[in-house]
Length: 396
Image (cartoon, rainbow, N blue to C red):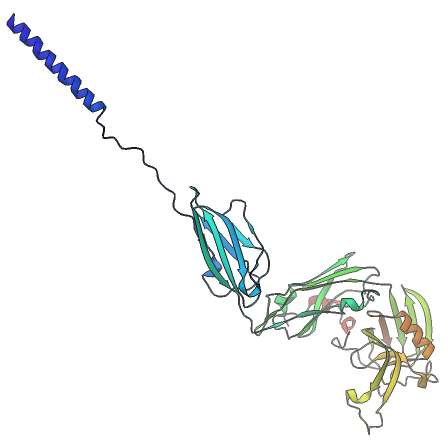
């Protein structure tokens, strides 16, 4: 009896001890709360800020890693803090400037970004653009405003005239563009180191719209010269006016849109001063000019010297050939070639030509006994065979 009671008491104590132990394990009061990890700050980079000055055509790029950009502001302190246009990528990780920069300028870039937790960060960078040794412009010839009301003739080449010699012709030519409507394929040819000319295989079709562009800003022209700015122009080709001056018959025959319009007696250059042969293009019109042979080396004291006021002048080459009024040679017109290289006409005929011919119209001279008009002689372009012209000379 005593033994059974004692055993029961021991079991009860053990059970009580177990319950107490179980209670302690289940609620010790020492457990840690869940830990949270904070995202690292977003990182902002501007590659152009880390290296040498950049070409002004190179966009400024801002990137964010481990987050996204919220705002980017690029300003040029030298331009009264004017902002530079740019666009943010849809995912916010990249901003790219969209406007050209300037030469020799320092730009301040202020970029803000947030990480995935929304924690903001802001950084400031400086980007510098290169300073060229010198710059050159690509001027269009003829000046668009000169022919805005009249249009150009079918023989007018498209011309970009650079204000400094171009050494890297091939690289520059890739940035020269011509669009014609309707299409009329053409090609570029350098008449010298500063003049790039564009023409088709034949004269332009009347009514053609021509758009030209020189995207040369920031382009290395060679020898430390860079393009100063881009340039573009638009032209419209008017009716076809082509005059054929035959030195054998001493007759000038005029064709309007391919149909003979009129003819008139004329006199070309004498055997001692023959006119250049081949297609000539009208490059200027002057009501009255002083023609002085001393401008090409025949000066006072020389029996061939002259200095005359001449009316109704259509310039057809740069070395002094014109279609003009010549009342002093009317008796020879139609029978003898007696000029110093010009196309001499009676005053009334010269007036008719002056009234109908303009920039880009054509005067084709044949049987003059003179040499072919040089390609550089404003405009000897049509003397170059098409296969040679089309092959180009940008690398030659």
